[in-house]
Image (cartoon, rainbow, N blue to C red; front, side, top):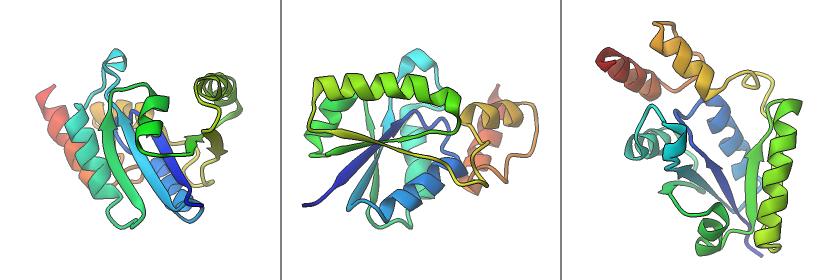
Length: 161
């Protein structure tokens, strides 16, 4: 049985924590789909095409990973891609309650799709896209937290703000 995992998120921007999780998940699942949510309600800094392009570049070396944008209900997207796992990252205990609600709702919508939680590596557990954006937009160095392509995009967009 082939196991396809969908790793959903806004990825605004993709961080070293995200890419570490995809790298580790790629050894557990036959296929990992990084599903970048359009999610305009969150008012992302980068548009969907930019987030997909950055993630595609950052994850290019992971053969069984692919990146795509989506705007459907996550369960609908997973069904369309024949995925049987939703992969979620848990950085802290504070993430658990909300993630548990999402997992329960997704199971209720389609009980054939399991949710699997992974924790970040010790080196990346403190990184969040929100913190990266905040630091970058105030001129701080985020090169230890994101790929150089993301740093370049943050600098480019920061000069326009």
